[in-house]
Length: 372
Image (cartoon, rainbow, N blue to C red; front, side, top):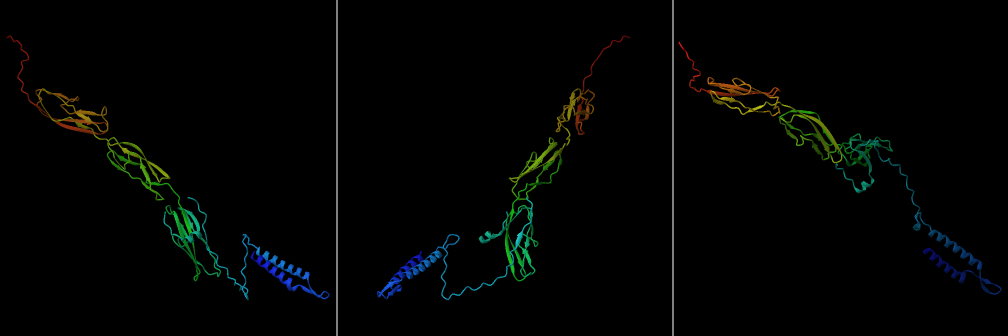
């Protein structure tokens, strides 16, 4: 627009000058000056052409629609020097991971600039990560390369469960004189796996044993676990007694909050036959002529009371546990009371019985008449 205004001003000035000087001719006949109209028209046409060309130039725009502005050249400005051709640089290291199958650790922190430019390589926990390099040296020099941890010299890293996180790995390539570094971000994605319950096998104990049991449970992800054990081992310890014999299915559950593992085993508590317990017997002192009756109190912790129990008495006690002493039975006696539960448990109880003498008057049992 500025150029248009200037051009119009120039045109007006030219018309003024032409009107005053340039285009007057002298008429010999009339002795007066006349205006050369054809010259004026040519000049005006040239000026209009110039204005049109400058207007078109000022109307040029970029592809984005912005005007193209050319900086004015300084006087005697020389043409730009030719830029020397630079040899092609070595190709950047290309990191390629082989395709891997599926399945918080701290990691070096990268700068914001690096974060936006780092190549990201993803691998899952418990996979083998291998960095394959594509190297090029324009001079055909021998290239040596190295990897920062956790990768080894061969560019390999066998990840484990629990390695989830981000790792900035520096790859260095050198030809012995010049060194190139490239950083890549290796993202190890978490793969949750179920807890592992080890050392599961059937167990056997005897009545009366104290059973202590703690399951061996591990979590590859090192997650906190909730572990439960069914009765009678839920408390981790169980003191068995005479009523504990039998088979028990023990169930173990381990959960990390997402995944759960269940295992079970058989617990056998073998019966231990306990001998009967005999009470209610004590040493006795009686007099001749008295009735002795033994009434032992027999208990069996295994529940063998009833027909399985057999009680026997040594002499002079009868099979029914009684003895009617006579006046000639004074003296001391040892009596064994034996109880058999029928399963091999036999218990004997020894008591002493003292029968004291009782002097009784003679008796006349019969009178007979004798005649001589």
